[in-house]
Image (cartoon, rainbow, N blue to C red; front, side, top):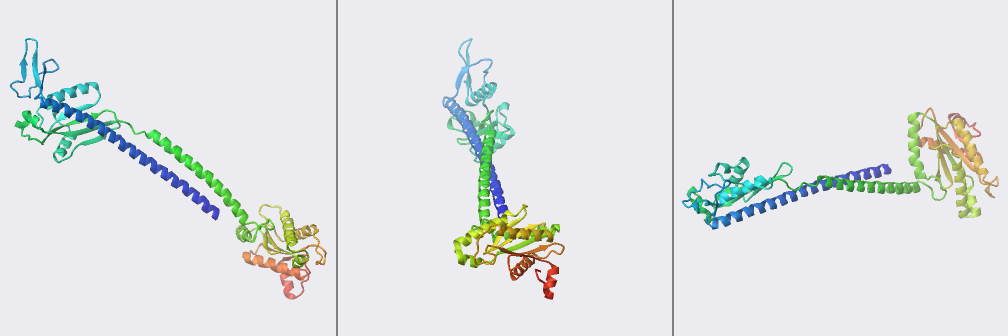
Length: 416
């Protein structure tokens, strides 16, 4: 379960990383859009201020006289007795006021397909200065105190508008319309045909690269952590003295094996082993020699396992347990004898043993048709081991119902 928790945490870390990268991408797109609008606003505002400065210069000079040409005809909306001055037969000058000048500049700008601007008012004298719906709304908002208005239009355009405030020099032409100094008499809209695009592809690619790099780091670190975890778990499940599995591994793995065997209704064998007269061996040779003896016996038992599901574990002290899935009574009898002989073949001298060498006693039990609980199966193997010791050690006994009945009747001689 610990491995599953680790994998879950790694997956969760990956999801959180992806979420953070996604949030970063969204924030950067938002910031880029804000900067884009800010840049467009400043650009449009600069154009508007240039127009206002030009108009102010014109107004302060009371208008500017220019030659009458086919493109520049006298302004029919300008009521001034000195609007036109005949200089000669070939030259007539006409007065150009700020509004007329602004309109002519707008016509020139429109021909260039560059920045466009439009002078307008809620009370225009010239029909061409009639406001659009957007300009009408902006002009009404200006009268309510709005200082300026701008927005992105479509993919690449930006429109901006600010009010024209009546100044003293403006009253010469507009006082009769009812305007007073400081009134909003109209406005100029500025349209930028092209504004900076959001670098969406670059932002997406960079964040995708960052996201993939982070995921790669998480995967690599996860593999390293999983490897360290497996190593730690493996170390935690191995008996440091003998090199075989420990009691903790047995407790966990045996339950899984038992549940699997019961579910599939396949035999499951358990063998408990105990080194005979081990205390006497320690007394004779000391604990370091006893530890070496435990290692040799454990490795001899381990070496007899032939299948992947089989395992040997140190049960405690000088006791070992072997679990053999899909092994019935005939198989466990033969295998127990193989284990006993393998220890004898080690030829470990034991002067305090009747045989003169180290031997083991074994007790086995099998779950077949009637599948007992896992604890009961181990208890049966323990009872068989106890009988093997009673019968003189250096032998194997297998628990089965027939022997159990013989023991109860007092007629048993060699096992349960």
